[in-house]
Amino acid sequence: MITITFGETDMGVLIKQALAQVPKQAKQVMASAMTGTAKEARDILAAKAQETYTIKTVRFNRAAQVKPASASSLEAYIRASGRRIGSTNFKHSAGRGAPARLQVLQSGSLKPLGVPGRMGFKARLNSGNVHLVRRETTGRWPLKVFTSPSVPQMLGSLERVINPTEPEISEILYKHVNEAIGKLLGGTA
Image 1 (cartoon, rainbow, N blue to C red):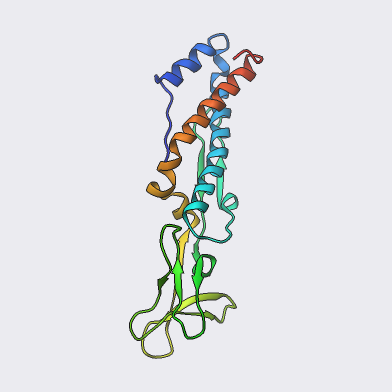
Image 2: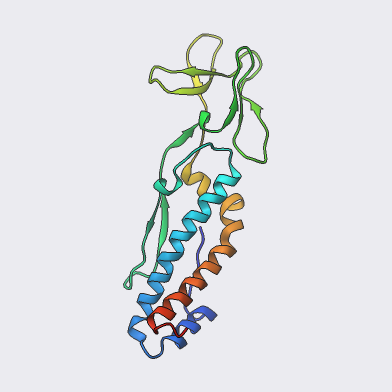
């Protein structure tokens, strides 16, 4: 979770000084800056997740909505929701007679999904969906269906997605605050 606070920090003091003439609108300026930052942060996080994982196509913007800030509630946040994604949406290999292999991270490699005596394979289930599966016993049923991380898990990965993008998001916040102050003061800031 990325948390950026104002208060008595250098940014909070800058906003108070710039808006000394119009103190009632300071909260509106901060709210619009935070909402704009959250929208751009969603796009940056989605791009970083796309770089980190081998997912073919996913609609990050549809799965992650921005709750805008308001003058009464000075917090904007990104809420991601969704189920785990089928493993066939990631880079995989499942040929006839060869064990199915799956790669979730760009930094990884194709790893076999089978265990000795039971190899993984690609199958169309009764639902009509195609999945990578493996038999759980030596019998025909049951099948273990392999799934991969959900969009919230991918976007919320601290070491892979959030931490590398945090400095860029802070810079965007400063840019949005300066733009909002300039707009309020008639283009003087």
